[in-house]
Length: 64
Image 1 (cartoon, rainbow, N blue to C red):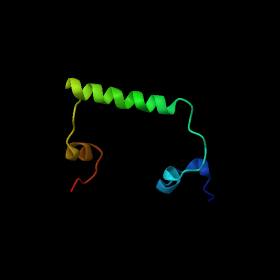
Image 2: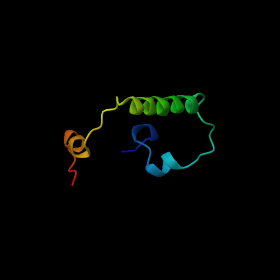
Image 3: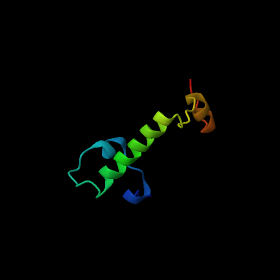
Image 4: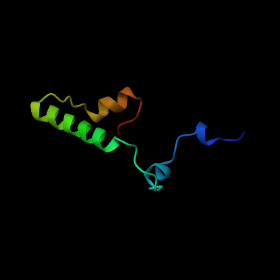
């Protein structure tokens, strides 16, 4: 069976290696808005924090 590029997820190395491609238009502004929204929620006391063990258990991971 031949594995195609479309049939697999990229490796960590592929995701973190700068391929020289230009950034997606608007990504930087979008990312900054996401960060600012999170900081605003944190400042307002509206963020919900989850215990790592609860999250791991929900997804079936052994947190220890």
